[in-house]
Length: 156
Image (cartoon, rainbow, N blue to C red; front, side, top):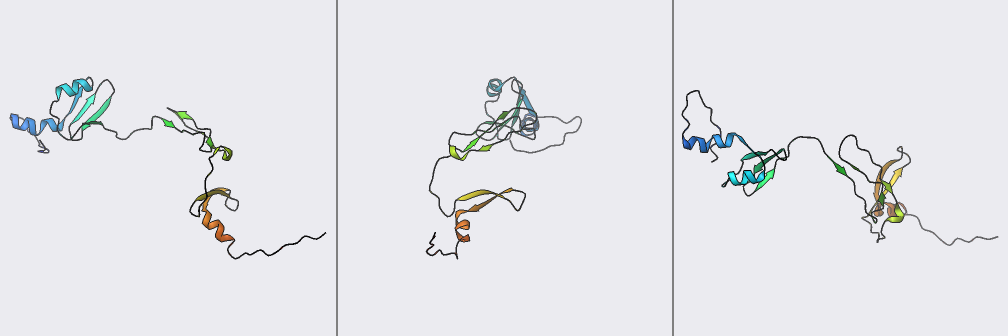
């Protein structure tokens, strides 16, 4: 196998060698299901394609097993999963049509942790239409870099 492509002319004789080397690689075989494909093709070659009618799936042999060919197409389902400790809620599932979901940040549901200077903090930038931005803890601590506090007394 692996002979590539051959242009045929009317009246060409197709011998067994040409059939095995060219024709089998230039077709997509059609089978009722994977069982029918597997019993018909006992020695698959890398690059072979087969269509399965029961699942409307195009498969190809990758050299060690049959795999589904995923070509261009629409997304058929979206699932957003939130866990109890993620600090998020409001996920949804959609399998067709327009999809919209609002995720709500619920800080009280998040787990606690130790903050390091490389951790990222999210904030709404008031000077930029409240667009979501991020900064590291190190960025925030450097803002107070030159400030020193002395003793403050309040007298009344």
